[in-house]
Length: 413
Image 1 (cartoon, one colour):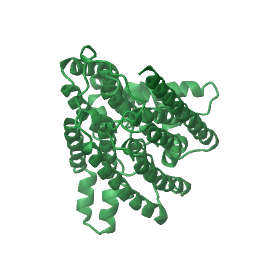
Image 2: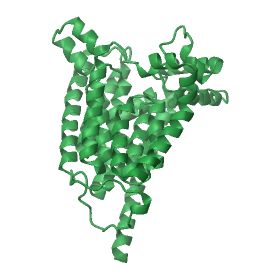
Image 3: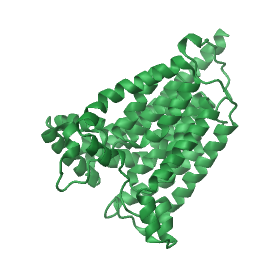
Image 4: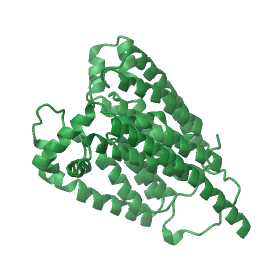
């Protein structure tokens, strides 16, 4: 048994080292892009937000008119991040480089995280391929290294919350990561109910720890804004429906098919909440049936949110990029390459919100690739053998892992 355990330790260490090197190379590539390109309009918009936060503070910013800038629709932690980045820019580091650093660094850790998630459910070779896939994903390099924004940070924290809850049996830390995910970008809120379902199924100690971590950090991060400017926070962040561009998914297809303007207006307005509820319901259903597959459930839920999104922006493509590698290598690679080309050509156009016909058609094809990947993900989750939900530390027993690949979780691709 000792020889077999040392064998696996050596294999895992070597595999982890490969992913670490790839993640470092990916981070370097992203930072070189960030340091040598002006980036899209969002870079300048974020700089304007940062300057406004210096004047008004990260809490009062929500109620301030911002001439020349769009609505400030970012959760509270993003404001503190922008305040810190602005301070760093005073040291002579270009803000355009700084604003793209959080997403680039998040991709570095996400590659390692995906490796750790997949190796528990598939072979070491598949785990390495998936981790490296995240590191070198064209769509992530484009959206993180060139665009920036906070989408990659939010997705990394959401996957980390799932990993900590079911793989590391650390519900307190999972609750903290869950709040961090929605505090830099609100979109992962659709996975929060699934996380609570799994914590509930894990038993009272796990639920209490998860809820404690979640509640305390919500109070610290969101509490001051909720108390001070609740109406502005609700209008700017909680009810934000995205832009009105017709570039992606359901809205794009509705436009092509010539559906009535009233229908398009409805699904981009109040109707988009229906699609959000569908994503939540699917996540909760899968989490209840297969709690041990929570990382895959998070991946499917975020991918479904992008699939059904009635808003469009190139950085939104981040929502499904890393998660599809949790589902499987080929799902992640197909999405990353096709949507990576979409993002690269989109950023080379006149504007990131004015897509050429070529980019629009690539986006249409990418939508179907995403749909196929999600179908594959749901099938793999349901095909996995039901396992006991995560146990509290007092209930855990230590079981040595064999040197051979373990067939639990997603089947090997």
